[in-house]
Amino acid sequence: MSVYVFTGPTISASEATCELDAIYLPPVAEGDVYRVAVRRPKAIGIIDGYFQSVPPVRHKEILWAMSEGIHVFGSASMGALRAAELAAFGMEGVGSIYRWYREGVLEDDDEVAIAHGPPETGCQPVSEAMVNIRQTLLKAQHSKIISSRVREALEDIAKKLFYPNRTYQVLFRYARDSGIDQTELHRLQRWLPKHRVNQKQADAVAMLRTMRRRLTHGLKRKTVNYFFERTAIWESARTRAGRTHRNDGSQYPEPGELKANDRSDNGLEI
Image (cartoon, rainbow, N blue to C red; front, side, top):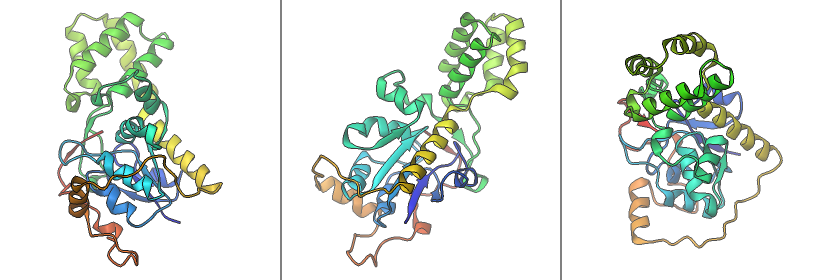
């Protein structure tokens, strides 16, 4: 039984393996779901994905994978976005971020977008997701570290930052220059290292545990309520993504061949 999961800066493959035995791949990009789906896994999980340095994963390839009987789960980042967009078609979203997008609480892609290092360094994040900042500041307010007024002011500053530049260090620098109460800022800075919230990682873990539970109980072939239209655009995209599907499987790409352009450079990811 094969299971593939696309991850990176949100949760490392070594951390994720503790939750689910699967084949872990770098953040997903255009064509990757198709290249995995032709191997007919039981399930595919999407956590992280590229969106600017290379073309993002297509909705159509996820729809095709599900129409072929493969369960596709999403959470935390690109997975949460695609799951919210494709929930009506059967993609299975997990976690708070997915729910917030589905319910319209969150709308902007930049809420989960970050900058990170290359795969060979473990896709280490170099910025902070807005959704994590929001949850951290809300926790600080509930813990009486900051007031609601200061929380709202800090959220406003963070939201106005270009997402690759969002870090707590930059946030505090702008906050000090904006006239926010210094006592509260100092209290927040002391509290932050041990109490910051990583909502994206929490949601990723929730998805992996959901997948493990579903697989343990027996995951039947996915059924969908739509007809997958094999348009000329789809056939062109499929051809670009990889080798043509053959019933004997002899032309399926190996997992090591999975790639969507050169990803050795630093990435921008959701």
